[in-house]
Length: 279
Ligand code: GUN
Image 1 (cartoon, rainbow, N blue to C red):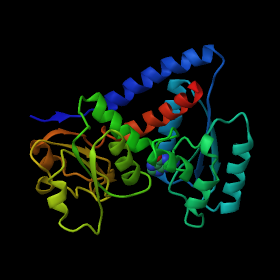
Image 2 (image 1 turned 180 degrees about the horizontal axis):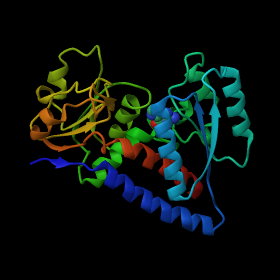
Image 3 (image 1 turned 60 degrees about the vertical axis):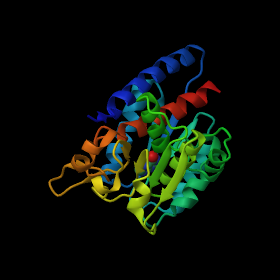
Image 4 (image 1 turned 60 degrees about the horizontal axis):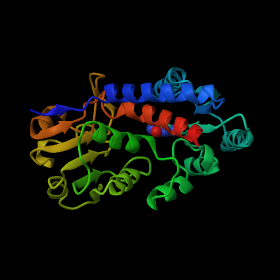
């Protein structure tokens, strides 16, 4: 039998803990204000942004909404980011991705003050993570670590394989697993003999962005499988990068989609905000 890692439940536990901490901080006069910027009205982004704002309200973090039109220019967005950087009443800044194509994402992420970069996307925070210094850590990979730890899965000494090398998930995921003393391999679209490598994994983290890409032939018997992907299939149902029905009988533990990694991203964003107010 395999264990289904319940991300919804673990995310709720984390938010409850943070809510208590935030209340104690508030009693000591310490609050956190998060500015959330959305450019355009991509339906998926609107859902994510609303989930983040709802979580803020639950935990006791104040959120401010900034909505720019789809046609907004890069300069308009940069001006808003700079204004929020300067605003001492704003503690965190989040720019929801993806951005419209006329805007250079890297330029915007670089413009966010590293001290307010609750997403952990600024190169200074990425660099701090890679050399083991404190700083904001990217929420989705931080959520994966919490899923593993809170499910009693040890990382130290394990063969960890990360499938995907994005700046937001794959690379910081590898860094975090390494920080937990895992033995880490990163695979990507140009990797040769992919299955031979993924089949070595005790812990396989899949973030390839392709629906149901990983089936049982990629997975070692008894592996822990974490699915970071989220897609809508032809019947409008959500699915991940992992073919759950094929893989689950071979895994010792696996995350479902939805209800696995997804809710953890928001919980870790809240954690980043509350931890910052503790400093
Ligand atoms: N788009 C998809 N995931 C994320 C995330 O974690 N943060 C932001 N800002 N945008 C995203």
